[in-house]
Amino acid sequence: MSKVHLTDRQWAFIQPLLPPPAHTGRPRADDLRTIDGILYILITGCRWQDLPQEYGAPTTVWRRLKQWGELGVWERVWRAALAALDQQGQLDWFMAFLDGSYALAKKGGDKVGLTKKGKGTKWMLVVDGNGLPLGFHLASASMAEVRLAEQTLDTIGVSRPCGRPKQRPHKLVADRGYDSAAFRRALRRRGIVMCIPPKRRPSSWRAKRGRPIVARKEDNRLRFTVERTFALYQGFFTLDLALVCLKRLHPTGSVRRHASTATNQCSIDGAGCA
Image (cartoon, rainbow, N blue to C red):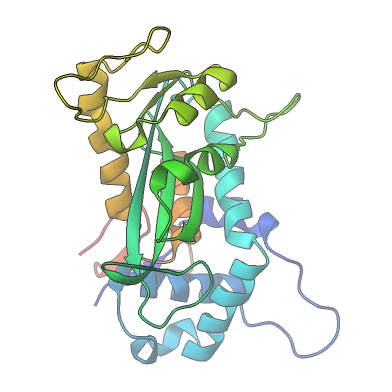
């Protein structure tokens, strides 16, 4: 099975964002090897007990994923990558896409609710015009997506060298499930142009004055952008967000110098995969 590793440039970007090792107690397992182990599980989908020995003990890798997730380390890497992409002009702020997805959670847990499909969590995601994740919100699956829309938009915050973080795309595209008078008013308050098709209504229904229906077909057809992005995030959610941005930030570059040159290796950007 192919080996998985970060490239030199990706590791150089991530390393300063990691928590410093403790000055007392048992030395921490090698960060680079452990993160490569997390990526191996994420990309291959193998069981923890099947993790190759070169990545360290499976319990150590699992514990690092959990601990750093709780500390917000993965989110810090993702947001730093977004800021770097924005400085390079690689984020498309003209158009953004909003949608939600359902993740099954049979054993329950935090932010899990009961639906007709069973217990689950709702993933809310807003992406830029290129499909890069700008913000996300996790909530109980029992809540309607439109009720979570504003909270999701509130998570957009791309830092800049000076001034306040960027938080507002020019236009937001969403499906008819977000056709709500309250949400439309919220978008107008934020100064965001809306592209939301109206719900199917009886033939006798007429739009109220002062509430124009704005849903350009050519914009709405591009909603596959956020749906395609959802398809990429079936693993460890926030870490996935960081990886998507890192691959755009550093799409090429040499593999780690101490890594073997065997043909069965691959970096997270897919270069050289067997």
